[in-house]
Image (cartoon, rainbow, N blue to C red; front, side, top):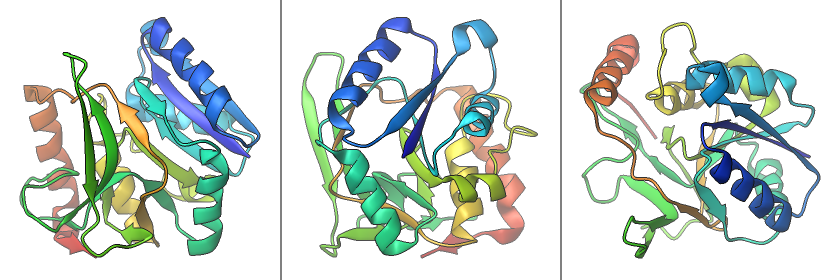
Length: 224
């Protein structure tokens, strides 16, 4: 009962993701892929278009360069939603959004929550696990966009901000904060995902972080 929405620009990656999801999800699903090398949407536009087409009550917005390692992760995910009444669920996030520019992972011990495999260009693999309170799931205020699961109702109430986010950054912070103000945003520790990109910390990324912080400044800081 999950609609998976992907903004893709590389056929080889989306085909690999398609096969991986089919092998691992363990629950009825649909895969909605926006082939963005043809359409050239912002990621906020692409996600809103994909979500508007979704037929299932749970949505997953994911990067194309991920690999699910947990079998039956769809059942696990839906179980978390039903148990916690969460609006959003992810695997990497932070407990605070400061009034100054900050992202979904901050350099302060104890404020991040993380459960992820990271693959590097040299093929080395790191496992990141930050759960200092030994929780089944942790409340956070922001999630990383590599994997954000949402109820469809939550998305309908807090659509991605395609009015002012015109590129490929900042959408995860903005969407997370809108949902944090309305309910629970969680990191969970039993859906293991491998990611093959470290992101790009370009001028565009920096400019967007500043833009999002400016947009939210009157509500900041926010914290769990």
